[in-house]
Figure 1 (cartoon, rainbow, N blue to C red):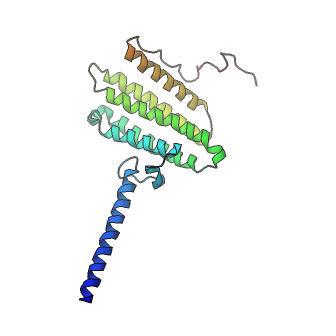
Figure 2 (figure 1 turned 180 degrees about the vertical axis):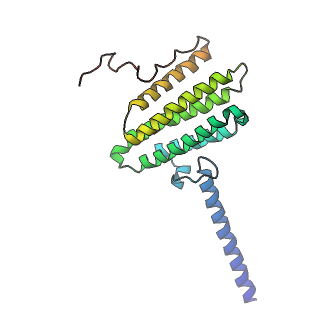
Length: 210
């Protein structure tokens, strides 16, 4: 009888341990940007409310929406999908690095990553719109590629501490928002952003001398 009780105790403990490990694994998997690709983000980010945790989940959700879009099965968009996933993973790494900075200096790097995350979300939204009626697929692909090139430049400059591409990325996001608002009201498309190197200087177009 004693042996039976001890055996039942071991079975119960083993079941509890298995369920706990399974839940921990599921929680970890839910935190991944791309399923099957480990993330260095803290597990707590799966439910935390800090700016960095929210940005992490926005990246994860954007990639979930990307995988749900059947348009990406088309050969012309395979490269775009792979680039989006690659940039999302790289941005997540930058986000983890920024979050590890001392509190008094982390806000600006996290805000800069946030701009790039917003651009990733906009790129995913553009891809979803490619399935709409009358969509110009080739033009849409080029828009997404242009935005992703800006994201890549901005991420590289995040690593180098240079703000020029980040500023251009913000301008692109402003133009995107204006374009979507114009398309929603039927007032026509917004003008394209100035090409890199031809941006208007700050302070009303007056350049400051060194």
